[in-house]
Image 1: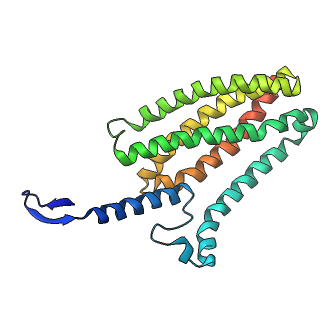
Image 2: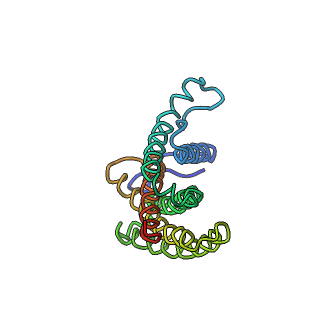
Image 3: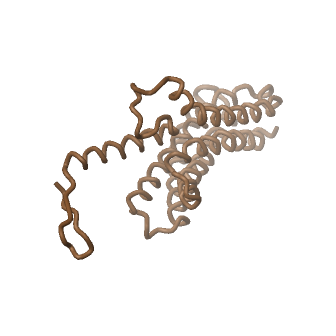
Length: 223
């Protein structure tokens, strides 16, 4: 058991280990659901919850992501002329957005944990975001180099391969900045960073990532 004392250090009660474990389980459950986009509230038992209620709680964030993907699809459609000239560019869009999303998720996870445990309390937001941006640049160079070689082996076009590699560097930096900055923003707005960050990181990486990719491709390919 854990003792409970007042300001004068006098014993006023105890918290049993069972209560502690129940609270830890509830907090862990809430964190997991938050990472999934708030698909279930912490106090509900999934197997005892009506399916309509389950669907209602999930549909909000899924609708947000649907709108995000619609924006991305519209952006890709606007680049149809480029894709007709260099069809090979389309093959690497999932690679770039997927990798960017993973990089952003890693950054946001580290920052959210740091905020919850006060590990980064003495560090300002700018310092944390700068550190993650540098980490993103390093990851981008490594992943971009690998992606460049793989794209060249796959398509045999160095210009396309170079566009993929450079885009991955830029997208990794973007994802790291978004993943580390958004938790600070949402916390300052009194919103739950764990709940809000994931869909907005997806939005930033998908929309801006595709825009970065086609911009770099235009420059490199001279289109």
